Image (tube, rainbow, N blue to C red; front, side):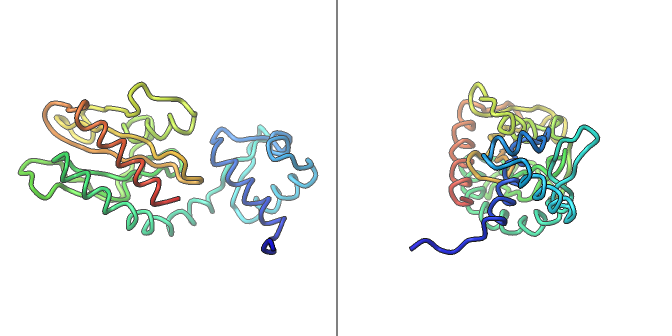
Length: 213
């Protein structure tokens, strides 16, 4: 026997999940078409969610996720950190580089977890809560590629001089976790070891995604 559910709540959550996939926003008509729901129903949902700050509508008439979603996301950060740390610890020790979990918050890449390798004399220390515009960091660019459903050539993004001169970052996005825009990275110094580090980062991103599903 199926469990009782609230159809209205279910539809409202689907609207928010859909908007998370389209940061450029969607019109009421576009939402209705994608969810196969009448435009009138979607309009009522949009107005209600807007009143609670969970979405906002711009002058172009497109709905986007609202600031209240970010406030809720901050309460999720400890859960993300707790779930990801065991995977990051294995990644850091296997690569000898600092392993990092980054999430997208608005237009910024936000560092929410970082684990330093236990047996490396030279590695990069990262401060939790560090913010960098998405387009200016390897984790951010990895997240943007996943948002745009754009396949990366090797599955990862490499950045140099991030976060400091002489450092490099290799990042892979988390895929298949609804509502979570995130990336797993390693940050190292010296020569970029993409051939050996890249597959390890991809595997860690997949493991983290499985934990969070």
